[in-house]
Image 1 (spheres, rainbow, N blue to C red):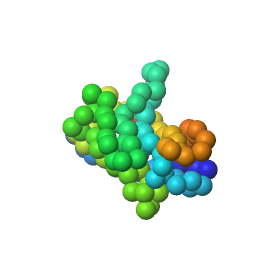
Image 2 (tube, rainbow, N blue to C red):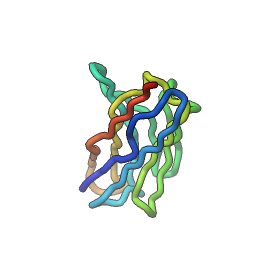
Image 3 (cartoon, rainbow, N blue to C red):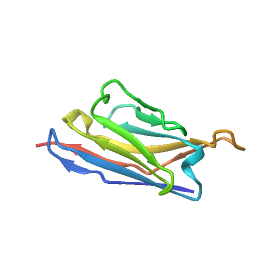
Length: 119
């Protein structure tokens, strides 16, 4: 079982990045998917989540700038980040919880991808 994030990097303020998180070893279709982030010397915080039915939720500071999406056929979850600010600088992690309506209760994490917003 593995979650592998990609797409991080250095971007100027106001720019955009699209993070991807590819799952292997399980099928994401029955899992709630989330993106978290952790900035230096700060606690990990929830950025966005998407249910198995596609319902999206966002932290207040990301609402309107970030979009979470899932492609069950590709077994991948995405985070489109627009209008990036220096305070968005953090390591971004994807997370899968489930299976919803299935057997067991699993909580999988990726290794994280660095996003740096700076001029």
